[in-house]
Length: 410
Image (cartoon, rainbow, N blue to C red):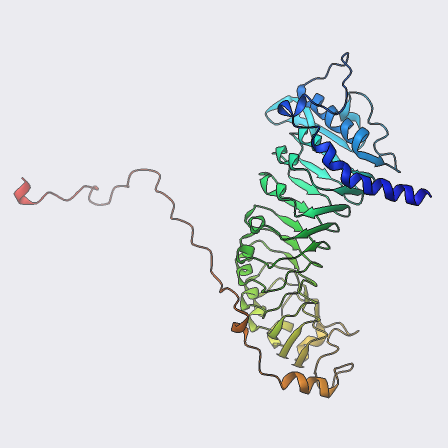
């Protein structure tokens, strides 16, 4: 009985969002506050009064279950003393406090995000990892112009990719993994100055856009969605910043572009469980920092390049469940002994595909990488030359001067 009641509350919470959205936003977002404020209370600033309204609306109207009691002490006007709420001086006014962070990670809280959270205009981080928040991400969050970190992972959010994140100018860390977002991802996401993007384990379906390589991220994890199409060659433009990229189980179906070899700073490169085809490009030898390299469960063929297994920092190279026919001796150092090369077509190696399966695969025409019609690599334009800050210096031994005018002008 209790389980059914909780399930009903969770279902209702996803519908309750629409009702909450209608409450906030009239007369500048303050006049129709969802909670009453005791007239006798004196707040140090309007900012902290707004924070009280936002947090109490959340607690009273939009949180249905708080089994660990994280919001139990959310009582009274002293919002800076609430559990999980952190205040800091304003950079523009060091003597004035504002709510700068909310961290309710691992609270198992059930509820939704009311639009009144847009009143927390000075919020720099919002961490709600591992709860049971559901419904949509409110558009009112676009008022959080200072938000630097947004972690909504491991919840029950639904709907389209929350485009509101594209309107957050200070955002650098975005974590939406383990939710139920669906549909496409705006290509503009990869033009944003983000340092980390986590979108894995959702229901997103789209093809990685050509501007994918514009992203300056150091870490990007998009695993367990459904993209299909090409692995963009533009990722070569991420060579200066990218440290980790995980594109596991995304339905990618193209060749590995040789531009992956430009990723000289990458330490983890995982494109396993896709439909990538063709040879492993020799250019992978350019990954001088890679430590974990996983291309298992694809349709790759040919011989493993010796230079790849000889990469100086490589510790784990897994290429099981492909159709490779050659493995240089240098791979013994980096391929896991418990099956890192199993289910290929390698002679004199254990646990390989049966000869008939290998023969049938190689009886097909060779893979034509051009047939995937992936866009070619376009390097970024060079930066413009710096403008000279002042007048030209004199030329020695003669002082700088214009040439004399022609005789007929004298």
